[in-house]
Length: 154
Image 1 (cartoon, rainbow, N blue to C red):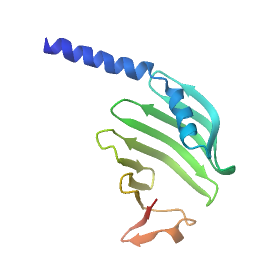
Image 2: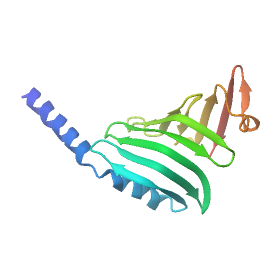
Image 3: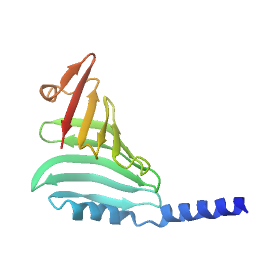
Image 4: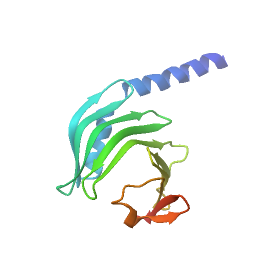
């Protein structure tokens, strides 16, 4: 009886992940933040949403480029990985990974090749530590031991 219930719940979970309209998530973000425009080639697979050769604009100003970003919108975990190139200041972020789970709904973890940190959505705080930041960012960061820290609120 319990085994059958677990199998039914697992089947419903897998079905929800496979048949969830992933492109809808992309268009919903554009609807929620109308000043943010993301253009690029958008493809959807049963478990992921992929954006390639993208350009990010904020209020009509080009802010950066996206080589490839893959979003895995699973029900219990949301995971995004990709490479970004920002225009101002000229910074290239490689191997960026974002992790979010509804079990900790107000925390978003971020890490990449030479940085790691978290965003506290409830406290409206961003804390990111760089091991070797680009020279163009060092003026905005505080040095703490061997790392440079970026702390701000929004």
